[in-house]
Length: 392
Image (cartoon, rainbow, N blue to C red):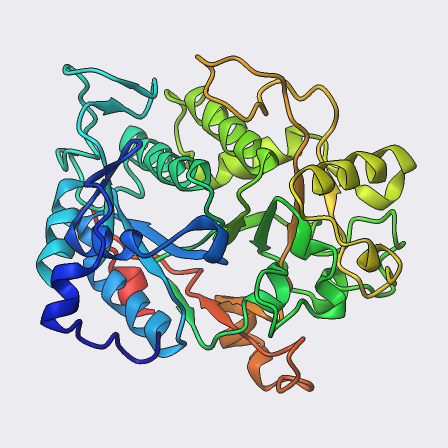
């Protein structure tokens, strides 16, 4: 956990359990095999996860530095291409790759499967502005998330240009850390399938305020785009349905210009017709039944709903693409719940560097203290390296 992991004694290294090199469709390097050998979904509140290609190795080092300084564990990287997996193995970083032969477009294994991102054979080494490669990168990301959630792990993914300032994520996201329960404002969202940061810049819109007609309004950052810089996927059928709907939406945009997995994430959520669970008795009953089925229902939280309780949204009934299984397996659609994370706590470039919310009144209170900075709003990248992010 803390500033750096202690060295494993030689005797322990011999006897420590090793996870298999292949878990589902994941390929584990040696540090990841040691890590997953000691993990169990039932006793692991979350896996801290990030993801990137070999061109982003500098950023992975930076991400790990701050994750370790904040004492966040376990932490693992998803290696989008062969270059990143090799670099992580060389530097002793726990990393996952996608197994050879898995075509992330079809999600089928084939000896003839060829994907330019996984093989590191893309025309550009930094994929962001390359049409097909960047969308394929999103499918690789979705594959990592699908595999980890299917193994039963809650996954907290943050972009490589996110800096973790301190621990405390659990007070907004989960009931699984008994010594640090959710804040009153987070008692509902800590049960939602998916939690996501936003591009909201105005605290009045993000929280209950004069612009919000609680509980039916579109507050809680919902007037702006969602931002996949920080996302929690809980190990639920709702999360699995969300991931498949996102994946199918990306497949539908294979030939589209100027798109990426985040744009498609936002569009899919819009298409899902999410509405506040508090807006009708039917939505509330449906959500609570799903929570009970997963052992996540906290009846006491529903007796304390107030205007400051961040809201949860539920997808519409019959959203066909949101099924918690691969399309080849065929299963019924599942409604998913989603909530947004507060801008004062999960900050972006504008809110942290320009508005300086870390110095705003109340910044020392747990409910207002920044946990992350997402280094958003920068340009000047090239096909080989994200210079704009580095300058930021």
